[in-house]
Length: 119
Length: 115
Image 1 (cartoon, each protein chain N blue to C red):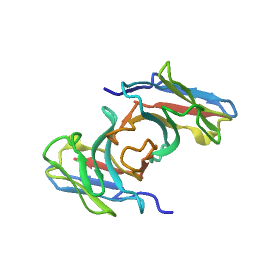
Image 2: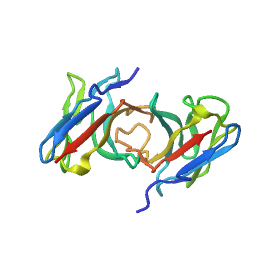
Image 3: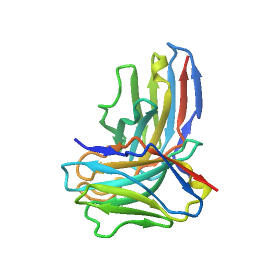
Image 4: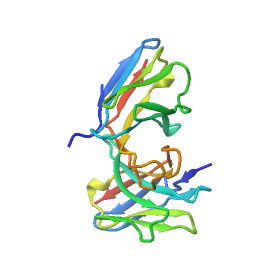
């Protein structure tokens, strides 16, 4: 079975350029998460979607960041304009969220990540 | 607020020995889940094991087991019979099972297995 797919795996860009990261969740999963990993801040949640609807975007650093999920099998994270401090590994994860109010693990499975370098 | 603490930045273990990676957590919620993930040098995050706050027995998955002590708010990962391929970063994480799907991660422990 295919896991979470992310593209590109590596991105090097110059400050001020627009960057678009892409994610295809595991088929059948209904929740999608974008995380960022840096040495200074560790792993932090940026935004997550349930059934394609953004639920919590409180982790999005600023207006330069935006995320969309136009359908159940695709999501994008866009940074415009990019800055050197955006350099990080960006992970997409997906899960199958059980019934509302359920107490299951709803385990999140991660993609391989996109390593972004902004010069 | 929820918080995960991993106090061991690095651990060494000899091949075939067992090792325990510590994780303590803080939450006021009654229903929560604890997760361990492995991040090898290649960078991907691999789910290892899960423990629910209401689970009465400690979780086990192959060579991985979780030493869950609810009163002490600890969820230590035990790896038995360590292998060279176990060398990686290990992250403990927690999620409130009611409401948000947000995972809170610890800072991780780097495990190195030597021959």
